[in-house]
Amino acid sequence: MKLKQIVCGALIAIGYLTNPASAQIKIGVAEALTGNAAQYGVPIRKGFELAVGEINASGGVNGSKIELVIEDEQGKKEEGINVFKKLIFQDKVLMLFGPTLSNSAQASNPVAQGAKIVVFGTSNTADGITSIGNYVFRNSVTEADIVPVTLKVATQKTGVKKVAVLYGNDDIFTKSGYDNFKKALEALKIPVTTTETFAKGDVDFKPQLTKIKASNADAIVMSALVAEGAPAMVQARQLGITLPFIGGNGMNSPKVFDLAKDNSDNLWVGSPWSIENPAAENKRFIGAYQKAHGALPDQFAAQAYDAIYIVAQALKKTKLTGRLEADRTALRNALPATQYNGATGPFKFRQVNDKDGKPAGYDAVQTAIVMMTKGSHYVIQK
Image (cartoon, rainbow, N blue to C red; front, top):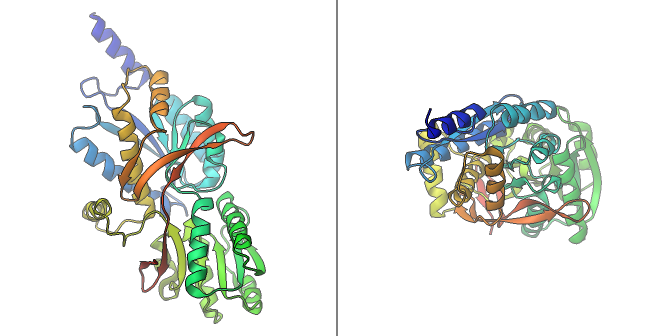
């Protein structure tokens, strides 16, 4: 047997090169494709697939095509861990995208860090995710970066003097959002009339909203996922509460218009992405997504789409050898310096520290766009 045949056979055996002729690059995707978090995970998958289709159609990365190995982590911690292990050790992917929620990322990302494989989040924004280690990346801008900007613009535009707070106290994302809202309110010297909590899966928010109404607040600051946040808005309007809602990343989804319907106006959110952003890169993405899926994209599809292109930029500078461990490390080393201007605007990474102050993973550096809902649209506020 010739040496070339021996080498190719060995690479196929470890599962890295799925096709020696085209040397496909296997990338793992762990997203919530079923359950409540699927409202984020399904658009994320569509964003990934759109970008990979475009890249492969134009010749791939240095002549190699990208292959996505997709698994449903269901928005659950345990399933996230199991899926990560499968993708890393059984499917032998080069890197991982996901998971969808911060709760799952907190549980499963240490598996990737321990295996020394890049894990790249496109939707988890809670504090501390990238502090797990130096193989952890994300292009989803943190609540710590977005919340203060959103709050400052919203309060200035609406003349808010005092607020009530409503947040989910059993989820790392919503608790992180609350912590950052609290810090931002203190910095702006805006008093809080009352702080109310709820749990994931709750459907009745009227007791909390009744207390909020009685507190005479000028606005409701809410850290919630849309599954709970939208019904809370509906019930607030039913109680005659017409105050603005100021929300975090979890409320920046067109699902709010489906779930809250005619009660979705006057919600303020911030994000690096807006469907109203007229930048050429964004308009091209929106057109391509609409053509592929017959619907408009959301923030999560846009971030996933850009993430593939960010990784592709790094891969162009990485000479893949077929030695899986070495290639995983080479990609990790190439990613931090990668910059890209896509649907979500100009992007670069910044390194963060772990709890001991040592260099760890990488967060996104992007500019926030503040929007307010009006008539089933997010309208940019300048």
